[in-house]
Amino acid sequence: MTFQSGRHFLQIPGPTNVPDRVLRALSRPTIDHRGPEFAKLSLEVLDGLKRIFQTPGHVVIYPSSGTGAWEAALVNTLSPGDRVLMFETGHFATLWRNMAVALGLEVDFVPTDWRHGVDPEVVEQKLVEDKNHQIKSVMAVHNETSTGVTSKIPPIRAAMDRAGHPALLMVDTISSLASIDYRHQEWGVDVTVGCSQKGLMLPPGLGLNAISEKALQASKSAKLPRSFWDWEAMLTANKIGFFPYTPATNLLYGLQEAIHMLEEEGLPNVFARHDRHAEATRRAVQAWGLEVLCADPQEYSSSLTAVMMPEGYDADALLDTILKKFDMCLGIGLGKVKGKIFRIGHLGHFNDLMLAGTLSGIEMGLSLAGIPFSKAGTAAALECLADTLG
Ligand SMILES: Cc1ncc(COP(=O)(O)O)c(C=O)c1O
Image 1: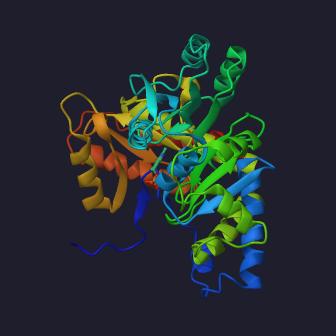
Image 2: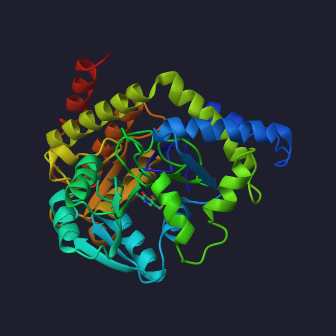
């Protein structure tokens, strides 16, 4: 492999670039996870995460990837054979469905074209039809990382309320938490699933659940087998700053620093920054003469943009060229859009010049790969950035 000088460009939609401040925090000596210093740290980060999820309620942290936090949401609240309503908004929604099936749940999986989010009207219709309240939970992926489509959560909640249905609402915010506005409490969500390696700017390794009182009640009678993921054991130990098993101590140092950074910037500014970079990215895509996969401007993602390749051109070959020539990785197409799209991550620790570099690398890559496009994309994005400077 040729020597690459300078910083690698990690522009996949997570894991994201880890800030130097967080890297330094991670490198602190590991401490006794049963001692008073650790208890202080964990109580501080648990409290900080509540502000990030925008909830006064419970938040738990697992030493796991996001998939673990998905499983925790299901096994703590549901029983074998329970019906759940899910939407095939993309690859990650499909994986969560597969997990639900594997755990013995009965899933009503509503198809989409992978270019749209969850349709609240379908939620309402399905729940109204479910007269005996067999459906125990509605599940939605807030930001579908495989497609760059963000489903609107408040209209889903409103649809559930209009139907007068008692199902729980569970939302995956794995690629939206701390990037796109999300309000666990205000939006009436029962379980929110998150993880460390995206908007929280940490390496992979922390899985998160925010839990409503209703979800906690449901956990008292839920019968799916659980042990590692058991909320009760976790919440009991967390009360005094401890964990029922060895936590990811150094990642919690990193989390403490990441929360400081997010709060120094201010969450509304963090969201506005992501919105602005997403808009500039879409201007570039449009000026290149390419198409954004997300078909509804109301559902454009602010953390990533999925770009459709012109017919007959392979996205993976383009990404291979960009990696080899410019040391930048972008997200490949997953599942049924493999080879057909590429994804630009613009979330987490990111700024205008990083976006300019990212788009320049793509533009050079499109040229090298012989893809028909107009070289006006980066210029259009720079203009948008200059016009919207705060
Ligand atoms: C929306 C979404 N949900 C779930 C997952 C799975 O998380 P993990 O790979 O950390 O287990 C991902 C991973 O990228 C994701 O983007």
